[in-house]
Length: 449
Ligand code: GCO
Image 1 (cartoon, helix red, strand yellow):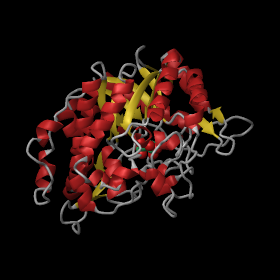
Image 2: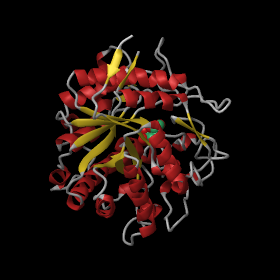
Image 3: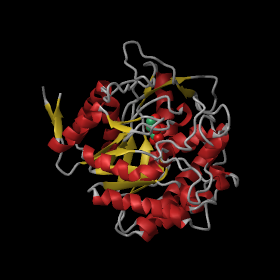
Image 4: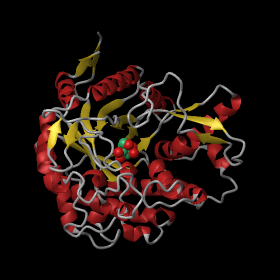
């Protein structure tokens, strides 16, 4: 047995997002979001479900914060639902929406829990989507204006701010593959709008700094290591290109204020909408980076794809590897590999792990959920986080995904990610074994393995 220990001031938390837990989709003046529209369109969600009620966190946040306190959490990452604040996406502010997040913030602070706020976890106002959404260059300004409204209201109490959750994921799944809202399928369009995503992030950072001078501002990137499927030179090159498209295209603007040269070269004939002054506008130094990390991906060379000559292989099953119930490979070393990049490639910034966790087939039996697989997962991944810290990465905290079971996007309610079990009929919450394990870890500053 070895003891895995963490510093006393390490920020131990869990994470959620607005659409996945809040419900109350039409309450207190909230506007429609693209996820409301998408889930209400038949055939889009695996189990036909919606986030109309979800975990009903909007009404039960006090109970939820009390549970967080019971688990001993020191931090909690949540996101703000843009159309609750600005029902039309811009213009008139809905005070009741702001009041909800203000009450939530106060409850967290009273419970001794440090909030980490994410401005955008995918629930874009439908009114903005109707004007092109992320394909409209104005989205950067709209996002900046929205960020300013939220920062003005909560900047006196919230210290840790982040902009866009997983830019490449909502861009690709929402605009290229159509699996997520708004369901568009246009690869080229996605590549072009990726620049607006990077611009929006930067405008958001500038707006937060402007309104809340004490704020510490960061990004939230999912940065899976991308490995070649074989040792061939072609597959290695494909992996490097896919890493550029998926990871460096967002990490470098946010953390280094520039686009990666090799990908700019790849896109040179595409007429990217990068205008004079954009690169300066995008150069907004951050206080920290947020890393969402679950597993690795594999890439392979494909001569039929002339532009990038490579593809990610989501179906590839490595012989001998282990997979979660959700189909993702259990590969704890992935978090070590990604964390090391912040030190070696991305400016040696402070890092918070803003998401990491596992979907499991949790069963509530006699009032208990024995999710040993989740405990094993966290113990294995956290040991790799510790190793990255030993190797010099400035990891400041860890937010397990997720505080409670919730609406998993296109998968609906078919997979459970929480350390708190949610009965979707009664909406009753039950701490799982992993919540008790986590409480122990937080209290004692480490665990044995
Ligand atoms: C993401 C999102 C979360 C997911 C979680 C599990 O990473 O896709 O940030 O909202 O629920 O990652 O898939």
